[in-house]
Length: 267
Image 1 (cartoon, rainbow, N blue to C red):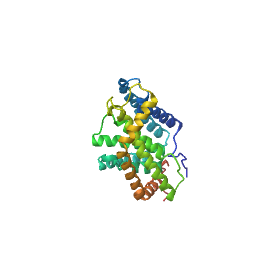
Image 2: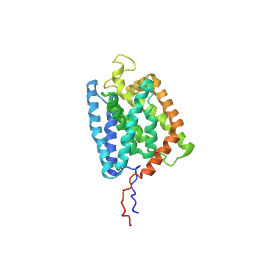
Image 3: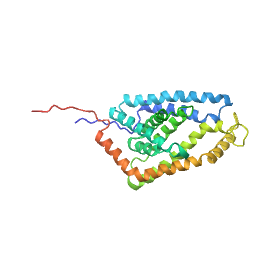
Image 4: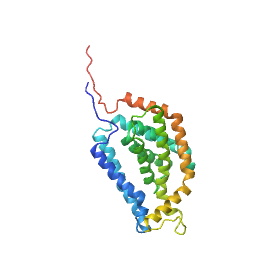
């Protein structure tokens, strides 16, 4: 029987280029307060995401065209993205309680960083459309979730057992705090006005603005980031082994990236 050797965990060269460009534009969109000359330049931050969004779509297309994702992989991607969209509102966003993150981390762990990036972005987009949470913050949320999926599927694939559980707990904690940090980059320039010691200074010194942002972040976000980290960690501890086993069994039985062949039965 002919076998197909493509690996769902790997990016093709075209995918790497698309992901790198999308990441660069998204990074600029997140960090604009530290180099924008004035507050009026803030409106240009969205332009970077408008460029990054089609690049993320190109990433999906390149994954499909070079067969890094096949029809079964895309179907599973859509199904898990729908589950993420359904899980996110269960906590109503209250103090960072969002159950979606544990499933994103576990799915990215099994299917790899390319799948994780696309899953995070699509799941967050579907969630926003489902709940009506569409606004200027949405592109920040989409790429923050994509980055978490990318990170969760990128490292230490050989770990199993209790070592894997510890690794996933670390990923959960880092992901919870990273998401809060990235979303504060969107919120901070507008949160306090211009007359406090933590306010964004348009065109100000990089070190001063960075110090103000870090202080603002730790004072305002811990009440959200800590519950998010605790909930995600608890869900990974309690459901992680079963969910990982189910996802790995599905991956094996579905024979992702293996072409379907028909054989003629001899009578």
